[in-house]
Image 1 (spheres, rainbow, N blue to C red):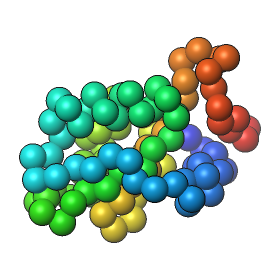
Image 2 (cartoon, rainbow, N blue to C red):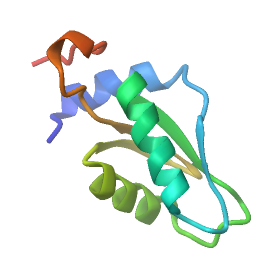
Image 3 (tube, rainbow, N blue to C red):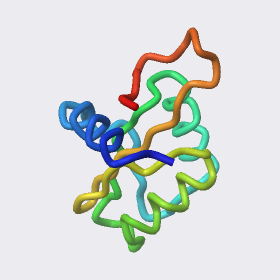
Image 4 (cartoon, rainbow, N blue to C red):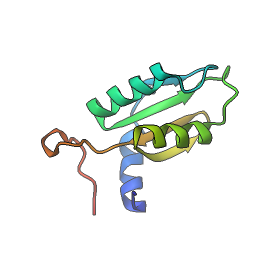
Length: 99
C-alpha cells in the first residue's frame, strides 16, 4: 500500500510518461495482462489508456488490472491511469520511494 507522499512522488514521475498500454473494446484480455506484466517488470511504473471505443469504466479497469498483476493504482484521470509495482529483485529497482 502506498502512502500519500509516495503516491505524489509517483504522480510526478508519471506526468512525463506517455501511455504504453491501451485497453480497447475487448477489455482486459490475456494479451493486455501479459503486456502489463512485461512493462511493469521493465519499468515499474506505466501509464495506460482506455480507448473511447471501450465501454469499460477507467477506475474499474484500473482496479481490476492492479489486482491481477499485483500492482498499486497511482492515479486515474479521465481515460488514463497509472499503475506501479516495485521490482521484486532489489538490484532491478529503478524508483526509490520516499518513506
